[in-house]
Image (cartoon, rainbow, N blue to C red; front, side, top):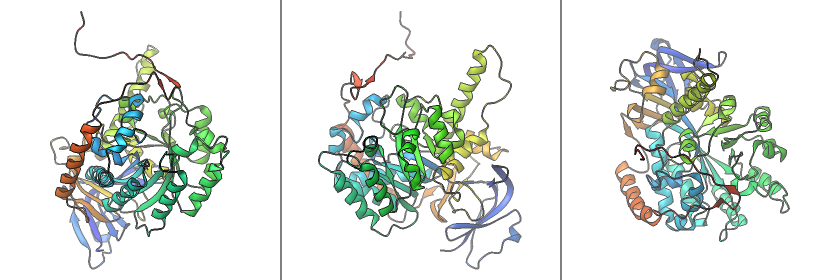
Length: 479
């Protein structure tokens, strides 16, 4: 692979000593194979390999790739179904628990739905994903999700959710995961494990699932653990940071990411910090479905950002960073205003939102070479053009990205030093966009009518969670 130089752009590096973004107003980035090997403010200071390709990025913003630490890619084909769905509806309607939904999918549907989802993110500069892969209702639909990750060109921690299913036993699921693990997995794909389906058995562990899980983690050389956690009024799934640490799963030394985690206790927060574990906040999802998130702002140092269900809204990380930034600002301002006082400071800097979508994702995955532009880091790079009507005139590059950019401003995307988007067009070595588009549309038009009608809302979620009325906002005046 020829080396590349991104020449004379505004480069958003990270200063480890200051723990802050360091902006280089005119700098060049040398990429050799899959790594950044030099960053120089004077192009002439670079020692270039003979085969170097020089890409002029003068006047453009060179950013680290964005990191999405929570997503379910197999559901991408649902796009625009359930625009007003709430979480209590989701499980029996469109999740992996729904017989109606899962019967609508064949293996190729899983593949093309996942592939399109990854490509949507790459188009918007998302270079790394943790995919909570709960396409786990049948042996035939598991591996296509993994194959899509391989073919996407993205960096993916593919975390399969081993869960009890009537027609697909735990033993058969471990066997399936082992079959995938036995393959020579090329970079940048790593296998991990989602614990939603197993964590419920860990408390009493009469069947020895906890120790078996730890054995499988070692046997299959898994690289990350993840699970949903809610807390508060939501039915508990034995997935709190406190309980997981009591089961000593942190002893695996793997990154552990708790998705959503909107109702953390003081004990949970201490466990996250003590063991360097992270949450994945998915701001748009949590606003959309009604998870809530009263405690996310208390643990920013152990937080990253994710998308969750990219069929209910867009799959880009700029939206998530922007929405979380303004949500925290609004809630913290309100505390001061409720006291009858006027805010004397802005509660969250734009730079912090940028870091949540980049470096914090790398930290969550225990990869200091992900989500940053530094010598030695992986060459996962995004170049924003900056000349669009919404970005034109920028002077602060971090503000330009977080507050003004959109996916249409992303000119180039590289993962492991290879172009995945170039000159505003996706680059995929396996499938052209025309083919992906046709296959995805065929699947969407066939599947969506089969799942269009939601089932009745339960009186109680899983027979436990009490439901309550919600004040409805409307533009219609009621007399």
